Length: 194
Image 1 (cartoon, rainbow, N blue to C red):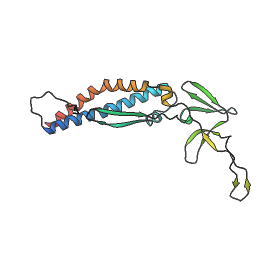
Image 2 (image 1 turned 90 degrees about the vertical axis):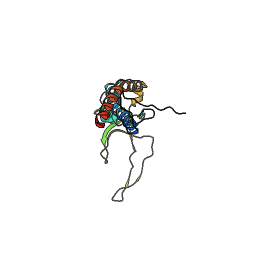
Image 3 (image 1 turned 60 degrees about the vertical axis):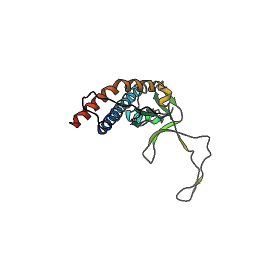
Image 4 (image 1 turned 30 degrees about the vertical axis):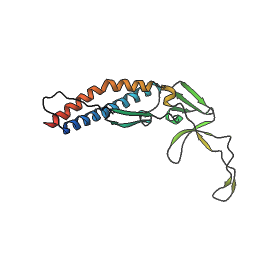
């Protein structure tokens, strides 16, 4: 038998089914609002450790799933893929490559360069010297020597730097703010009934 989480409001009036649905909606609203606060707090904590990244780039890697009621459940997923090196603060050096300011300190990548692709994507790239050259003909049908393909370079992922601490941080913030948001949502729901 499944147990259901039911919220009760101190009231002398008998509850109707409509009141119960209103309470469940209030719990869902409170969980959603708290989840947004958790994502903001996690973004700030991660950004403090990963200097040079924009909040937008971190927030895009944290997926928030809508709250469920029975029981109250909110799901966060952090993308574990490495971040493109172009998202970090980088400096093009004259002959040495690119210097990237990563969370564990600056690092120089030799033979790398910053570029903007035709699509508008900016990044740090390196020619793949292991690949075979692509030969062909240019627009005037002259034989040309091919170029080596580009490979985008990546830095650390959020998980590499923050580890599992983001989960503990998110849980602590959720527990801190959920009661406050639930009280606010229930007070709003009771006010609308009258």
